Length: 507
Ligand SMILES: Cc1cc2nc3c(=O)[nH]c(=O)nc-3n(C[C@H](O)[C@H](O)[C@H](O)COP(=O)(O)OP(=O)(O)OC[C@H]3O[C@@H](n4cnc5c(N)ncnc54)[C@H](O)[C@@H]3O)c2cc1C
Image (cartoon, rainbow, N blue to C red; front, side, top):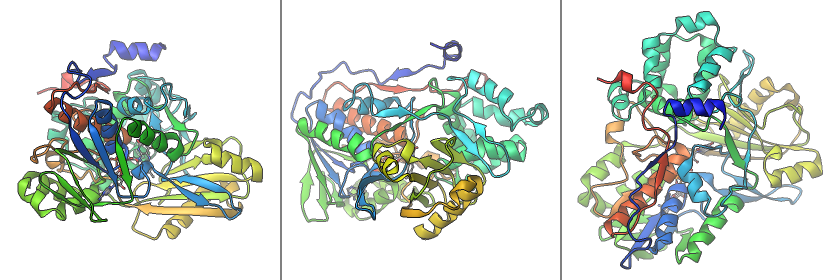
């Protein structure tokens, strides 16, 4: 263990085992049937845990392929090359304990994940800030950032309003939401009195990664995310990424895993109505019945499905009210370019981008994923993916063009690269985290008996976000069912549930 991790342990920054009451039988004592609606990370995490304990699981996925926002779809390039194109680059952080535990079912050593070196943040105005080379664990990572960051000079540090900064170090699952959910992330950052440069380079990129604008994002959610990724993270900000497309690396093996355990996975037939009982009617007209239901669809799909299910809404008014009030955040855009030439050799595989109007990140897929690398090796080209995490509602082609121009402002060598092919996508399926909304965020447990929710927009009892929130809520939903039928549950792991200074900041 390195010195930073050891110091972190002394401060109590270590993974915690929670929900360990798996003492019941390893298999359900009576036959149990569960329908899982939605085959993304949340739904498949629930399906894996249930199927492994002998539950008869049916997964209903509306799209032609599993994966949701982590899916990949087949495409053919103009030269005839087949490529599976991911929905977008994803960083698999090392403290995603529960998502990684699901993935270990298909690859026990997680060999398909490769470290992504470095994590620079780029700007047209200031030199890059490097997050990937900080010490692995808090508080050493914070101290190193404060000492080493070119964006923070001693006088900038002295100007920071320490009272306003304290909540960032004192995350508490109750107090943080009680005291800060009414404010916006923008107000929280304004209160820190950072220099414009420090704010842009250290905070704004981070805030954008949660698919919401600072002015619409709850300050409590930003504090929780800061705790989860930085100040409560025993593994550091380092992350890995699959060296294969997501369909080959994740979804086909996970489908095979649950099918080998007797589960049925049905794709391409969306659920259109839920009736108490539980019955799920699909677009094809087929109805699926089961004693328990896990609904693991994305936020706008959940809102639409509940709105189209009047009998469910009548049985579960709290659920219906909560779901209606929690929609999706602004659109995000992904543009993958196949260029007829390469970027400069020293460019990082993944870079965050600060203060460009549209562009938030750049990924060099040809230095990461095998299919893209093969194409680039054969043609001398490059495969570059650009993301905007919270953007205006414009056509995908317009956003791709804007991101490409902003890329050229940062990396001039890309301006003249010919575009061999381009795939673009705009989506608005990420959850909104509006100020004041935490108290009514739907949780896994609902007022609909034997119906559970899962997904990255669902309230979790553990610090988590994005992919890890999806997996954590999926496993939690499975555990609720296993407990009800008297079977052993799946252990969950978490970063520390409270911040470094939470104790000192108590009432
Ligand atoms: C461009 C991009 C980049 C990202 N980068 C990262 C990252 O670097 N790190 C990270 O942790 N997270 C990242 N995320 C977020 C991550 O993808 C999500 O948090 C996660 O995939 C959510 O999983 P989920 O299962 O909750 O929802 P989803 O993946 O949305 O799955 C829901 C599923 O339900 C299905 N469905 C919807 N309606 C119905 C219906 N009526 N009937 C049946 N099925 C239905 C959908 O088709 C979908 O498959 C990124 C997301 C995007 C878009």
